[in-house]
Amino acid sequence: MDFLTEAREALAEYPVVDGHNDLPWALREKAGYDLDRLDVARDQTGRLHTDLPRLRAGGVGAQYWSVYVRSDLAGDAAVSATLEQIDCVDQLLARHPDALAPALDADGMEAARAAGRIASLKGAEGGHSIDNSLGTLRGLYGLGVRYLTLTHNDNLAWADSATDVPGVGGLSPFGHEVVREMNRLGMLVDLSHVAATTMRDALATSTAPVIFSHSSARAVCDHPRNVPDDVLELLRANGGVAMATFVPKFVLQAAVDWTAAADENMRAHGLHHLDTTDAGMAVHAAFEAAHPRPVATAATIADHLDHMREVAGIDHVGIGGDYDGTAFTPDGLDDVSGYPNLVAELLRRGWSRPDLAKLTWQNSVRVLRDAESVARDERSRRGPSNKTLAELDG
Image (cartoon, rainbow, N blue to C red):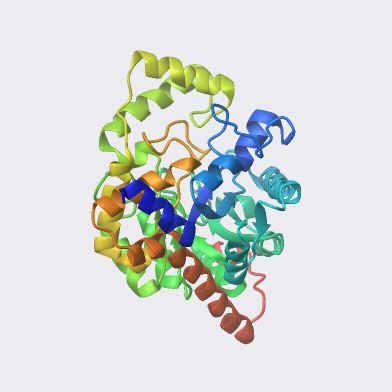
C-alpha cells in the first residue's frame, strides 16, 4: 500500500479537525455574503481555498469556522461585524444540512462524525470582538462561539499581540478576568496571535486546556506568530493543543523576508496587506511573477509537527490550516483537499496510525470535552462576572 492510500484510509476513520478556516471573511470580502454567487456546494478552485467537495476530498471531519473581523474595526463596529460573520456561518449550515452539522460540544463533534457530516464550530479571532465586555463575551458563547483568540495582529487594552510592540506586558487584570470567564463558560482560550508573555500569563491563569488554533513552532521558523518551546512544554501540564498552521510566512524561514516585501508592495498599492479580494490577489500575483516566492511544502509542515510532538507530546498537537485567510499556501497543501498529502508525509516519517488519530481528531475533541468539564465545575462554584476594564485596570 502506498502512503497516500494509507493516509486516506486513516482519515476515513479519524478525519481532520481543523482549528481555523477564514471562509466567512472570504465570503464577506469576495461576495458580500451572497452565497449564491459563491456557492460552496460547487468547486470554487481559483476563487476560494474551501468548498464542500474539497473538504470531503481532504478528509475534514470538523471545522472551526473563524468569525474573524479585522483589528482596525473597534467598538460597536467590531461587534456588529462579528455578528455578521456568525450569521454567515449559520446561513452556510442552513443551506447545507446534509454536509455540515452544527456542533456546540465534543458530543456534537462525535455525532457529526458518526453521521458522516462535517462538524461545524465557530471561533472568534481577536478580543476586539467583545469590545471590553464580558457580557458580550457571553453573548458570543450563546451564539455558538467556542473559542476566542485573545488578540489578532494588534494589542488590546488588556492583552498584548505577537505582532505589536509590548503594551501591558502580557495580560492586564481585566485580561486575566476574560480568561477566567471563558473557563467558566467552556469557551476555549486561543493563544494564536498573542505575544509570548500573553501565552504564559494565560496558561498561568487558565484552569482549562488552551489551544493554539493556527500556530507552528518558533524553534523551526523564528516568527513571533509561532509558539516558543517553553510554552509548548507548558501544554503538557495544561492539557492543551497546538494546531500547526500552513501559512508559508510562518513556517518557512526563507519566506519571512519575502513576505515582508510583498506586504509592503500591497500597502504601496493602497491595499491592506491581508487583502485577498480579486484585486488584492492580482497585486500579489504580479509581485510574485517579478519576485518568485520561497515555496513551503507538506514536508515543511511535517518538520513543525515533528518538533511540536517532540516538545509538547503527541497528546498536544493538531492542525489549523488557516485556509482562505492567507494569500499563499504550501505546495501539496494548496487548499482543503490537501490534508492527505500531509498525513502521507507523516506516515513516511514513521508516525503510527494511533498517533495520527490523536493529531487529526482525538486531541481536539478531548480538549473541548475537558474544557466543558472544567466549566461545569466552575459554574457550580460561581456565577457570571460583570467586572469591567475600568474597574480592574483603572
